[in-house]
Length: 402
Image (cartoon, rainbow, N blue to C red; front, side):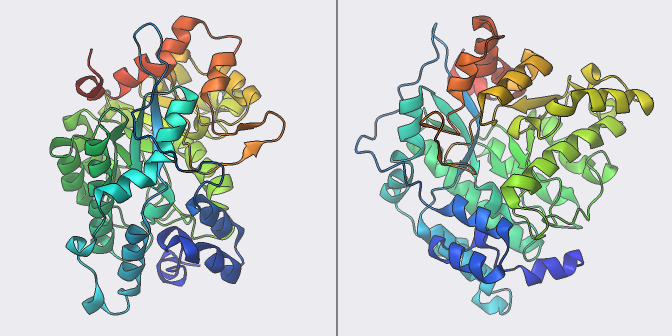
C-alpha cells in the first residue's frame, strides 16, 4: 500500500477520534495496532479523579527535583478529540473545516483532566515535574495535508501551554511539530520557534516516520531534515525521537511501531554523519532505546564493520529515557548505557497503564525501578533524575531554578 493510500484509507485512525469511538473503530478495522491505540485513549481505570488540586509533593531529595522527561497529554477533554474528528471529516468537504478558535475548553475542564491522573500519580510516586507534550499517537502526521497538521499541532500545543500555565510547578511544555509525509521539515520551523519563544517550551517531539509505518521520508541523517535541525541548534532545544500512530496493520502501534522507530533512529545515527554537521545537537531516544541496549554488542560490531565511529562518540549527542517497565530491563539499561546518557521518564498514563500482577504496582511506575537498580549510586540516581535533564534541556534551568 502506498503512503498516499495510507493517508486516506486509515483516515479514521482511532488516535484522532473521540474516546467513545476508539474501540468501535478498532473492532471494525480488525487491526490490533488500532486496538492498542484505542486503549491508550481510555481514561485510566485505576486512576480515579483526586479531589486535591495541590502540586505534586515530589521526592528529589537533597534539595533536588525529579524530572520526568516523557509525558503525553493522554487524558485530554472530549472536546479536543471531537474537534479533531471534525477536522478529519472535513477533508472530504474543506468548507466544514473547524477553526482553532471554535474549540472551547474551560480551565476547570483542563484541571479535571489531569488532577485525577498525571498530578495524582506525581504525588503518589514522588516525582516533581513532567516534560509534557501532546498525545504521541494523536499527532497522526499521515492524515490530511501539511495545513491539516499545522492547525492540529498549533491547537494541541496551545492546550499544553494552558496546562503549563495552570500548573507551572508540575508541567513544562514540549511541542508537537506540524510534520507531513514528503513535506520539508522547514515547514516546522515557525511552530518550533513559536512554542519555544512565545510559549516557553523546552524541546520538541520529532517523528522520524510521518507516513505512519511506511517510512517514505529519508533517514534522519539526510539533509532533508537539516532545516529543523538548524532551528533546534539555534534555539538550543533537543528533540525526542517519537513516532506517532501506525497506519500499517503489520505494526502494532505501541508494541512494535514505537520500538521500531527508536531502534531505527539509532541505527540511522550510526550510519550517517549528522553529528559532524551538528556537533551540539541532542536527541532523546525514548522507551529505553527500543532494542538498542539489549543488542549493544550488535551495534558496536556493526559500527566497527562499517568503519563508523565507536558508539561512545555517538553518545555525545544521543540519550535514552527510562520508559522500561520491568526491573530487569532497567538494570540492563543502566549497566549498558552510561549513566550520563540516561534520563528519567515514565510516560505515565500512556501506552502501558495496567497493574503488574507480580508486583501489584503499575507497570509505568518507573521510579521504583531506578531506586532499586543495584548498580546505581545515589550520585548516579541524581544524574538520572535531574542532572542529565538539565544538560539535555538547557531551557529547564529557567523553569526549575538553579
